[in-house]
Length: 80
Image (cartoon, rainbow, N blue to C red):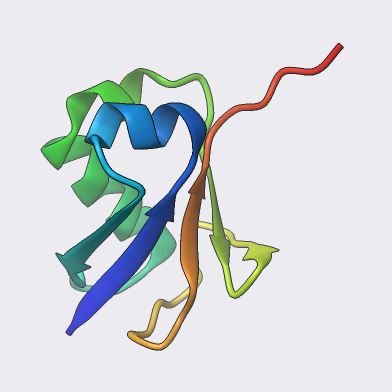
């Protein structure tokens, strides 16, 4: 089972592409995915915050993930 993750802003710059596909962690949850992404891309762990959206809604760390989910990594946003 693999998951497709869309990346935006600084997360895209860190990873070097706008979409990645990774094997689903076990268990396949948002928190486990974030842990795996931070292992593979340590600079992601240096961000002050990074949210995950699943099917266009912000997701908690315990939310289960499925191969059909639209997953996006949302970087911190500054406004003024």
